Length: 176
Length: 176
DNA sequence: CCCCTATCGTTCGTATCCTAACGATCTATG
DNA sequence: CATAGATCGTTAGGATACGAACGATAGGGG
Image 1 (cartoon, each protein chain N blue to C red):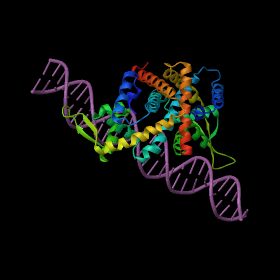
Image 2 (tube, chains in turn green, purple, yellow, brown):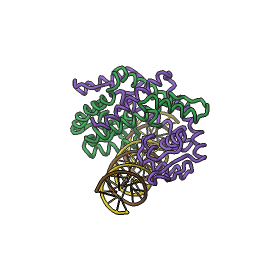
Image 3 (tube, protein in one colour):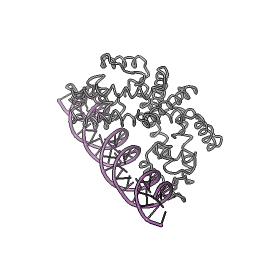
Image 4 (cartoon, helix red, strand yellow):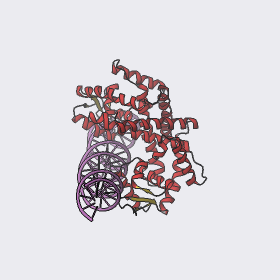
């Protein structure tokens, strides 16, 4: 929500909490839940924009394009709908990304031989080359980004985040 | 990066790691760093879209508009540049958001009396009413989203994320 | 007192991404 | 077989956000 909730100075965070409680005039509210959500969002935008302006810019790839190449690289030829699931983007978005990637000769689209509604996507030799050279650099930046955490903390961070994602997905699905 | 890295099934995550290592052909890479970053991004988009489609849609507010109102509510009248810092959006984006909010009579813009380059923004009575009614509901959803974590885990999550954000900000600033 | 530089908010062009509507294709049912 | 319903990818339109360029304003140095 606000930079102050992501501050590295504990005093500033405490002060922010006090400021909020003052405005709320005694109404109950969950500060730790708010701090967690705020920081998820802040960290995500910070990391993403860092990646886009460094590694991805060098290789002229958008975040979405990189993710698509990566999924195809690791798991091979995929139907468009599965790529959408894996990358977390919608079909509509994917159409545009795949169009661009195909124009740049990084992926190849073919209609499924058994079901002509489906489209199969796979890396070209050029696409394989690009992702093979981009990924190690990308991962090096991920390593840098998390280098102030111990390995155990990195794993704990991922675990906690999975629980949040899972919980929200359940809420969206069941609507309760 | 991929849904599989955010899976709630440990076996699926382990399998994903194995698949990646296979493609990498022995090249070293940092899985826990990747898992952490992937899950930050996944959690952020999941939570944000949940908020936008529930609480914020009901009150007809975008994520950015909500954040602006919240900052003004807690910390009072602000210069535009400070709002940009707090909310983490650019000046250009903010101009648009503020324009919309002002048209809806939720905020009021005035030029700074001492420095005519600056624009001061504050909530109107209507704006105060809107954020006062929206925030408790927003916070309730934040509480729901993090309800599978203990309070200590929520705090730990925020702490770890702050370290990542801080680290990446430092990287961007010093360029090393 | 007058430029030179810096800073602020706005504007404009561009990129990304989502939703809704659509046509093509497949499948189940009778 | 024929047809109704479901599913897939594409398209079109709109919302959001960023960065660069710009005009207005302020403050320091000669």
